[in-house]
Length: 261
Image 1: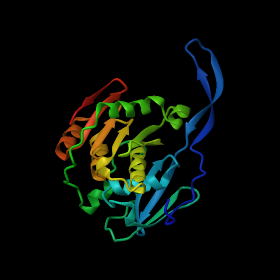
Image 2: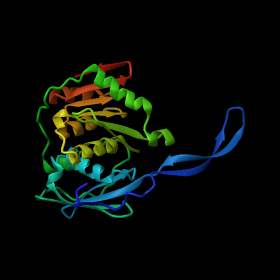
Image 3: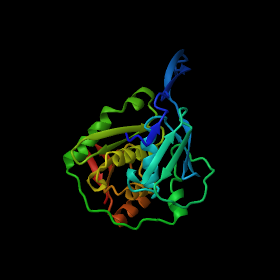
Image 4: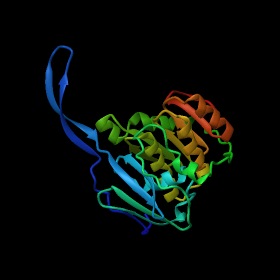
């Protein structure tokens, strides 16, 4: 990680043990402690302007911020970030870019998992019309990523409540990221791509979340030509993918998948 990226929130726990009662249909009641996801509210400013407020799992925060800046159309590479600072509590982050950017200050809170992740693109008036390079992965590549999902991520395995996103690099290396929100997990993967200085056109993303239009738009903004999901797409996401040249594969399991565009 470059020295200009200062993340002081690396030791924040991502799960917590919480007591609960288990009630069965038979009437039996037992007590146990269960692991649940810890979520934090992270406020991010860019060049001194409040940019966004995220509800997220407090790990890979540098990747999350870089990825969100990329999928919002603010940056294209990590080199455009002069300085990134995250406080020790993981609540405040300050980003300084090498060039000025213009958008209205943002004061609302973004939900954990639903839509509404296009604020900066809309404010900056930078809706991308670029068409992605046409890439169709080999079936073995798709099934291999589905197998990664089948093995399950550590956070989901311990809590049952996390979304995962896998980034496949050109050399076949697969990086895994988890978060309470599917958008955040995807942004973390995009941020990792920027830190690795990888060519977006050679990368593939696999998400465990449903692919709505806003999720597809984030992948297009990042310049990644292939999005795979174990879940289903919406009609708007399929239409947008065809317009932008995004190869969209859904219901991807170890033995079958559906190719939409």
